[in-house]
Amino acid sequence: MSEFSVSYHIRLSESINAQKLLREAKAAGIVFGPANGWLTFVPYAGLAAYRSAGEVRFADYLSNLTGLPVLYYCSSEDHGWSFALADKERPLVQFACWWDPQPAVERDQFDPLALTPFVATEALEPLLRPFNNEEAMRARPADRFGELLGLPAYQWLSPDLAQDHTQDLLDRAGRKLGTKPASAAVRFQLPPNRKIAFPEPAPTAREALNLITPFMAQFKPPWGLMMVTTWGFDVPEGRGVWKVWWRYGDSGDTVTAVLANDGRVLFSADSIPSYATDRMAKAIHLPEKWLDSPHVTAIMAELPIPDGFDGGRMGSMTLKSLNDCLHWEIVVAGNRGQVGSSSFWTVYVDAVSGEVLAEVHTRKVGFQETVRQRVRKGDWTHVDASSQSTA
Image (cartoon, rainbow, N blue to C red; front, side, top):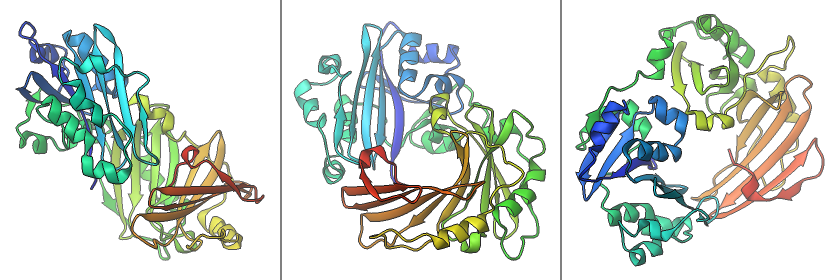
């Protein structure tokens, strides 16, 4: 599993008791240190202040709360790393480096002088450049940055880990600060998992939805159906294991139910921070007549496989809405010819009329990615890979 870490580091002062201020503000989480003039703080994912502020801006919140400089640190092993420094004495300083999909740096809001009280500029500068994936795996700039600044802890830390795997962080010398907020599952009072007779053959999307919906009766408006998706790519004739999502209005609160192939109905809940809700699917309103998954499978069977695509026609299926257009998204994975290569054929089908709205073919070999698309069965055209997201 690749590392994804997010943490906050408060630059301490003898005249200010940062932990006391955090406790009084009920900023609950896990702390490490102090060490080398820093106190590491990892908020619980359910902390309201964190969820409303957003990752980077939560550093601003902590700086305003304590009156001290606060460093935001983020490391995504497969994609890049970033940091931001919040200080009441200057505007927010930010830096980001990405190696996926292509090497790039963002330093428009970066001032190297802002970090001179903590680290020598000449030691830091070699880390503030573009890296490709291979160079990044070797140089590990995010780890080296944390090491140079002497941060008490920064690897394998995140609000989600603090919330869901608290003991793991305590076992690494972390300490609880404040009271952990209730998990989403507790707050939403999920129905208990249960077991029903699994249909034979496996259910279609409509059949699975009809089986699951009665157990969700307590989730009344503004809760609404958000998405119906298969569990995996193996969906012969549009039948398989299904996962159904509900969302509370425009918030980041979601509940899901999975109808497993042994008849278990498994419920879970999540709460996405407010700064990330723009990327979430909107609630869908199913018309009286909409195309069930076997009909979409039949449509896929009639489509020609794109030139150069090394897969078939069966893939994951998702029923959702975009710009009030109810549609099916079918993602077919190609064969992996070599380590580091991948290819996907994504098809979008109107869930009422059955019209094929668009197709996208992505192919990645090493660090080179090509993307082609065609709209309503027109001609295939090449597009900028950076404007597309692979499945």
